[in-house]
Image 1 (spheres, rainbow, N blue to C red):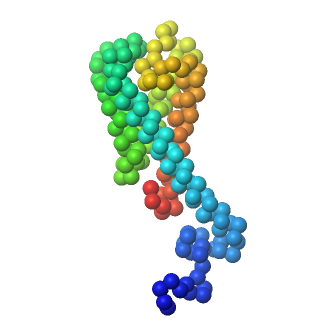
Image 2 (cartoon, helix red, strand yellow; image 1 turned 90 degrees about the vertical axis):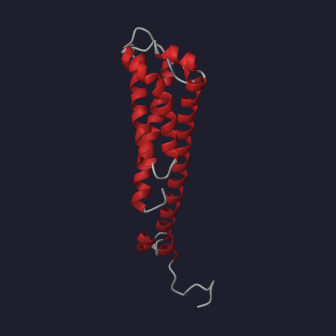
Image 3 (cartoon, rainbow, N blue to C red; image 1 turned 60 degrees about the vertical axis):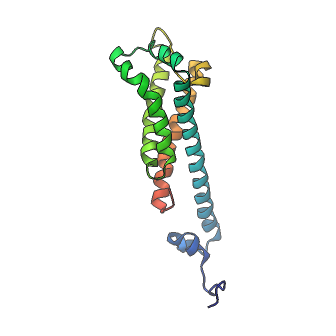
Length: 180
C-alpha cells in the first residue's frame, strides 16, 4: 500500500471512536457520538475558563485591595483565631485552586477544590440572604461586592454547578479515554 492510500474496507468510525464501531452502519448514531465528543470537549474548555477566571480574579482582587478585604473579613461572624488564618490563606487558596484547574495533572483536584469552595460560599450567601445573620458583611472580590445578596446567591449556585459539572465532564472524558 502506498502512503496516503486507504484500504478498501476502512471503517471511519473505528478510527474516530474504536469502541463505537458497532454503530458504523447507523450514520445517525455514529455522527451523534462524534458530535457529542466534540461538545464535551468544548464544554470542558469553557468550564476550565470560567473557573480559572473566577479564582484568579477573586484571589488577586483580594490581594490587590488587601486592606478593604481584611476589614470586610473582620466583620464576619467567625472566631478571631480562625480569621487570623483564613484572611491571608483564602486569596492564596483561590489562586492555587485556579492553578490546579488549569494543570492537566492536577485538574481533578482543582475541580474538587472548586466544588468545595463554591459550596461553602453558596451556603454562606444563602444564610445571609435568608436572614440568618443580623449584619450582612461581604468580603467578596471586585464586582461581587456590589451585588445584592439574592443575585450573589444565584451566581454562587451557578458557579457551584459549573464546578460540579466540571467533575462530571472529567469523569465522562476519562471514561472515554479522551485527553483530559
